[in-house]
View (cartoon, rainbow over the protein chains, first blue to last red):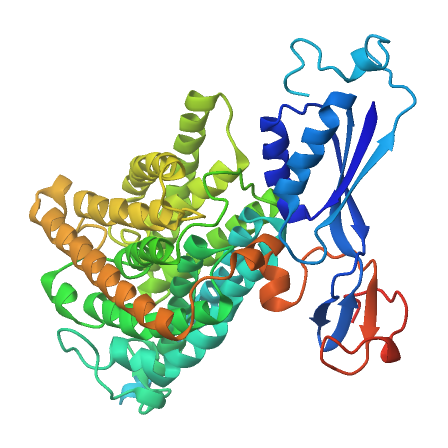
Length: 121
Length: 432
């Protein structure tokens, strides 16, 4: 099993979710985060005071998948999150020691396989 | 002597009414601002506030004269350009200057209504250029036709406070603008939800409040007609709200807050042309009946390709047409104006229909032409990338909801590339 962590642009989130859904990747966590890659700062002005916003809003996706799903999940994210400009984000693939499903106590492979009737997760 | 005709009570009421109608513009800013996504909240509100600037300035310079200078058939003359001869002498029972100011607030808020159709993707500079030109080329002539003694006035069209001039006009212009600017890039693919429904209700409340100046102020006096218009303005939205919540409940099992806000505005739109011409019970009936076409127009629009994002056509266009026609049905000479269909004069309904058709045709044609011309000089549409990031940042360089994390104070205004020499780490943004 692997944990896929992706940092993406907030405005790409809907496209990424749509693509993941079509790739039949189920079960993920989304959080709003702040971060900074290599992108240029965004300049804002408030009543004459100019500020540079160095931390940009990003979205972090965390997806636990079985080995056979790693490549297509990463592929789906790369294809749908890309704009071609600096600041598109990163995808990290991390090894996972074990996974438990809280509801049933199932572990590992069984825990990352969508349960029947689990379609909405 | 003219001066003696001024009535202090009327002047006092019209001063208040002018302020009330001005309030409707920031009210619309909250109404529209709450309905868009958070990344476009400021841009949407600035579309409303900006009109107070550009349209507000053009009104005393040119607009007022085009609308109310002389009683020619098609457009006013140049006699009041730059407020020449507009002073403290009487116009009716109030000072002429006050009449000009009152009408100016109408011009400002009418242009603002169009914004709802093009939010979240129209470039701000093109938008401001458009509403400035529109207020002179479309709003002022239409106001002249109906209120300035133009041909619709001579024909006998009843429009108490602007059902035709304001609402049908803006609603049709909005639909044309939505078509020419094009839909938002994610329209029809993604759900785009209102980011702040309490703002929508706040805006609605302020609109309702300001509308008393809009309708009851259109009596241009503190008299019985104003009381009638005030009461009708109070009652019609109540009926509209009740009907809307019932329709909502019947269709989905729930009464919604955004629906309630929409219903109140549509009730106000429907009663606007009739406010001083119908009985209070007719106003209740108009609010109830007039809401239904708009309700179904909104359902249709959401499934269509027309990204009239905040339903200006369904709300103001369809609501305005319902109101104008129903005025021809319910008008009662005992209360004011002339009789309509229910009181033995079916011809009035036909006259109302002519008024509707004329304003739809004129507004659509000239709005189309203006946008086509402006598009040559200033692209109407923001880049897809800017639309994705959000118009607050790309058009205004501000955010509605910034927590200030990671913002660095810059003391002078260097080019964006200059960085390190002037930085003070992690100062809170937006605290100026």
